[in-house]
Length: 243
Image (cartoon, rainbow, N blue to C red; front, side, top):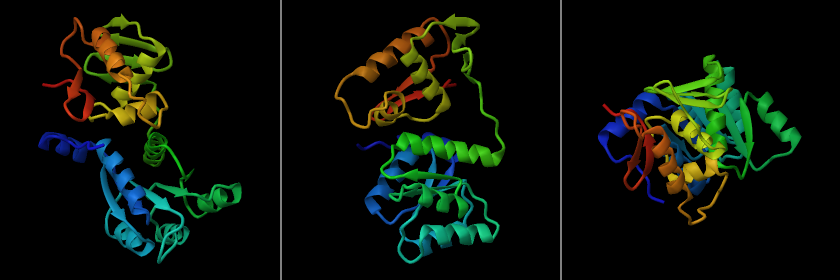
């Protein structure tokens, strides 16, 4: 799947709004997949492929979050994290590992990890956890209302309005719209939507996404201005009030 930002403007938007994430993972294939997916989600990503390189990068640059493998060459993940914490570096960190029993998870958290994710994991879950740990360190309160332009979503009441007019959505449409609002201004790919909205970790080879996007457009955009749901050719979709 070849997905990338198609314009300089999109790249500038990602640099302005996304997190800067350091991935420390010695499995090059896994690291590259994760880096690509995070970049598609609007984040800036650096990679390190062993513990020593990861520690050097983490010390030399400021990151909003770290994704840190437990088992690394040259310096293991727990030692790397303990070194950072001992130096006063409190960068939000998610440990990822195939070691998933309770004792190992406890060791990771006690070493200073903010969260612990067992391999294999879904990208959508990792992304959600990254957002949570970064917000927690930043002191942000969970949002119960979301908005883009004159479109408003009340997560508690499960209501959507545009220009004050109520829009009736089916449960799946509500979930899809919520996902797009949370990623407003970012390209969301078919893979991201399938994982996050349908919990599919494979392509079912159907037009289910196109059908639901079409339904959302008919409810969210028809009769309103400006249009909010846009197709990004060759990449996916974007919810944004374009000027």
